[in-house]
Amino acid sequence: MAKIFCVANQKGGVGKTTTAVNLAAGLAKVGQRVLLVDLDPQGNATMGSGIDKRALELNVYDVLLESASIAEARSRSDKLGACAYDVLGANRELAGAEVELVELERREKRLKQAIAAVDDQYDFVLIDCPPSLSMLTLNGLCSAHGVIVPMQCEYFALEGLTDLVNTIKQVHANLNRELQLIGLLRVMFDPRITLQQQVSEQLKAHFGDKVFNTVIPRNVRLAEAPSYGLPGVVFDPSSKGAQAFVAFAQEMVDRIQAMPAK
Ligand code: ADP
Ligand code: MG
Image (cartoon, rainbow, N blue to C red; front, side):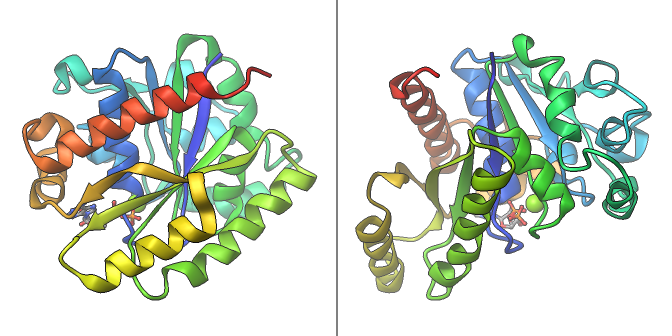
């Protein structure tokens, strides 16, 4: 049975896609079987995994509307070498799903059902959510065991977190009893900036062991990698950013092993 995690934060540009893509590659690197689901119509996780979103015959939209299975719609880039993982891609078509799903039955459970059919083929399923608390994100949250929240240690970071934590609580109470906040991941971190250190300390004081030990530094190689259609972990494995994501992948594996079996 795969462990299923959403990478979510309703703010844009906070590092969700970078986290999803590099965690997928990092987990593959340490021997895990991984499916990455792109739930953002921007398709950045798809492109950043070496898959051309414009060339997809089937994608996550077809899966949500139940006209294709994940087994039919997934793809895998041959550029990823030893870090290869499967991708259920997305493109602009997915923007329409938001409206179309509203009319349909079981609208928030579509992705969950689709994943259940391939669940035994993976150790991890990662879901890259769009920057909103929308029907797409709700499908992600209803499918998952846990949520990984990447965040920058900035002044307003804590404010946005309250809405997300409340949404997770509501989904837990009403739709998905398995859902929990797994952890907050500090990303684009620059230890030379005093404010970032202060916010980081506040986070630890508030959230304790819900803050991951691994910290992802601001690293230009991580930002360059997507234009080559590669995760940073593959693009430049020796970079500080890549090494941090491989360490984070190992931390995730260790946390899962330490979690009580249900
Ligand atoms: P989101 O998916 O939350 O919108 P992205 O992962 O696309 O955020 O990141 C936003 C921008 O920040 C991208 O240009 C990305 O390359 C860059 N970025 C993300 N993480 C880092 C990092 N650790 N160091 C440097 N740049 C980063
Ligand atoms: Mg994104």
